[in-house]
Image 1 (cartoon, one colour):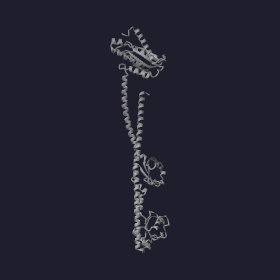
Image 2 (image 1 turned 180 degrees about the horizontal axis):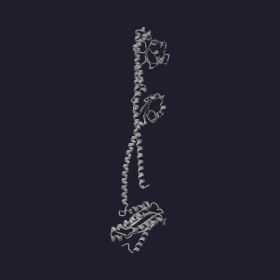
Image 3 (image 1 turned 90 degrees about the vertical axis):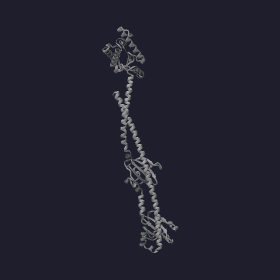
Image 4 (image 1 turned 90 degrees about the horizontal axis):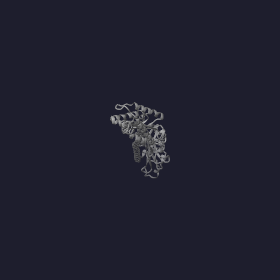
Length: 481
């Protein structure tokens, strides 16, 4: 795998990691926001439900009081009529006609001891205040003739049918008169005030359901989900033990095989539960995540492009700063950096080879053929060094005619490289100059395993000067000229 491919792979991997982290963070934040909004919606709806329940309870109580007053008034009216026309007291038919006119369902005549002695229902004759729980309610009438009483709607003693009874003393104190009403209007109103009717009549919202259950039995008395009516809260997956005292409690639970945001609160004698479909509340998460992914992906591409451009520019600038303009080799700054950062930090390997080379005859060439010819020599020397040694390490031009090569090769390979370099130098021919020669000093680490790098460099430099001295001695030329 090439370094370039590895670098691209690393950038792609980093980009995917960044996108994944940001996308996950976005999803978590959106889920949190959706949950908060769901809880706020549930609290608003909870207040509405509690308000309706409270209002209906209050209205029912007011109506009950009004109906009781009306019943007592009707009892007084009938008592007055009977006092004026005592002859009709013994006629069931006449009493029934009077009941119909006054709009009551039953009339009962009691003696002073609380026994029924007449009225529209002969079957009840003989019943007393001791005949049952419903009739015993009126016993206080026996001790106070100024008292008048009206009973709540409840099953009567004789037949168990729902009735409301009111009773007053006759004007002469000889007995009491009781009327009974089956208050259709109150029954209808109470039905409309029942929890099931209240919840059923409330406006519905997509994905939101309401449950109202009895505090003691946990039985569902009202709900927007009809088939849950009269079921137990525990049986559908709602555990009231989650409640935090009297506070509104929020939780997520699986209700009827669906994940729900649930809000639970105890109000009056009821448990109120607001349920919101988890998937419906979070239905926009997938779409939003896709949009964010596209945005992050495009943004990452732009950022990677910009970073790549900047990196390439920095690399190019560093490359220019570390390259010799004439030869294209690494310059002295790069050489010093290599010694400081790479070679000196790690003990050289046994295949480490240090080469010090010096271009022969540069001054004479400059003086006789001009600096153009001298430049051609420098470029030729760089070309030969790069061609023969470049695959095995780095080559530097560290001065006017001085070169350094730091390569890695065993002894056999080094012999071959030396031969290749000598052959390349011998065959080289330029436009202005035909001959090219380098004086080289090679040092292998294996020769001096205990030497430091500085000592190896000194040995290479000494060998290079010996080679240069031999070159000039062989040519019969003074190198200073």
